[in-house]
Length: 142
Image 1 (tube, one colour):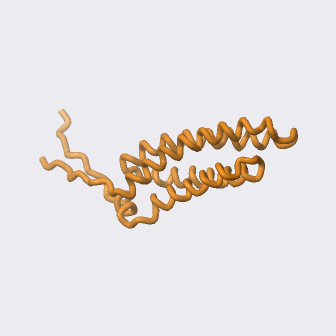
Image 2 (cartoon, one colour):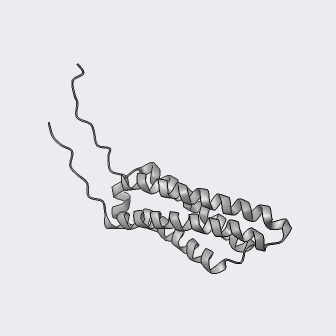
Image 3 (cartoon, helix red, strand yellow):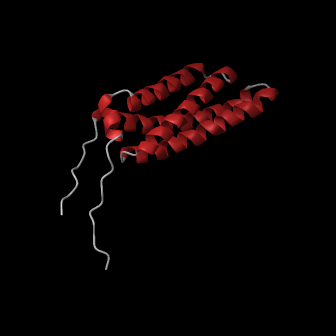
């Protein structure tokens, strides 16, 4: 019986995973700030600001959960995290238009784009996520 070869995770992927965890935590905190900023906007903007804040919190938490699957080399997690972060970029742009948290939201927007770039641009990261699945050894059924 042969043991499957252990594949080392590339440094770019490890950095991306750390950025995903940090970004998820910061986006959750940012969502709370956006949600609390509804008290400083006009009455007609309370609902949109509340919805953007709640969606940012939810996607921040989903990003943290996706970071765990990403650390195991899941291709689906990479695709889902790209989708989550893309939606977060749109939400952060909407929050910039609705609130006065421009500097904070701009930093979060750049961080989300950096994570997407770290997941897709380096060649060794692409190879890490496209490796063939490890086959389980055949065991007799008794």
